[in-house]
Amino acid sequence: MTPSVASLAHRQTRFETLVTPHLSALLGFAARRLATATDAEDAVQDACARAWAAFDDLRDDTRVRAWLFTILRMVLVYQVGREARRQRLVPISRLDSVHEALVASDSDAVFEEVVDRLDREVLAAALEAIPEDFATAVELHDLVGFKYAEIADLLGVPIGTVMSRISRGRRLLAAVVAERRRAWALGVSGDAVVSLSRGRRT
Image 1 (cartoon, rainbow, N blue to C red):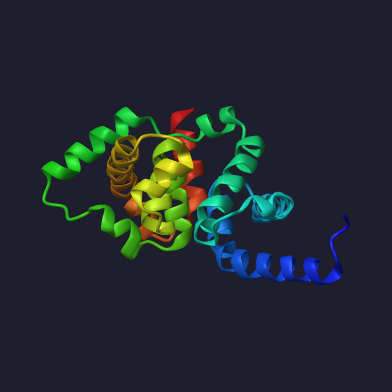
Image 2: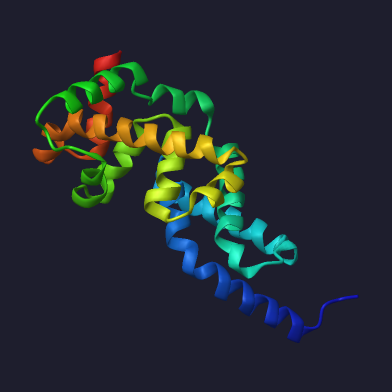
C-alpha cells in the first residue's frame, strides 16, 4: 500500500526532529577522517540517505545517535582506504616513547590539554596522527559523549576493549601534543604539521 501524504509528512518531520541535532557531530566525525570538507558533507549526506531508507527500522528514538553513527561509520569504511590511513600514522612505538618521557618529566601536558586548550584544527590533526581504532574510541567518548557501553555496542567490541582503547588513545594523543606543541604554538596549521611529520618519515 502506498503511504499517504500525511504519513510521509509525519515520517519526514520525525526524521528531521531526531536527526538534525546530531548533524554537526556527524560532520565533525566525518571531517576528521576525510580529505576535504566536501567529502565529509557527502559522507554525512550519504549516511542520512541510508538512515532515511532504513528509518522504519529505528524502534527506539533514544538510540538515534548511536544508530546514525553506526551508519556513518559504514559509509566511511567504504570511502576511506586503509592504505591511505596507514600512511598518515605516527609509529605507535615512537609515541609511546614520547609519552613515557612526558610522564617522567615535570611537564603538565596531559590529555585534558587536548580537549581544553587545542582548537578544532589542531585536535583534528592530533586525532589523525594516531591509529583509527584509538582515535575513534577517544572521539566517541570524550568529544561526542557516548558512554562506554554505547561505544562497545556501536563498534561491536567488548566494553573492556573500549576502555583500553580510550586509555591508550589518550596517551597517544598526549604524546602527539607534546611532540608537536612547539609548531602549533608558533601558529603552524594542523595540516602543515602533519605534512612536516610525513616529510620527516620519508
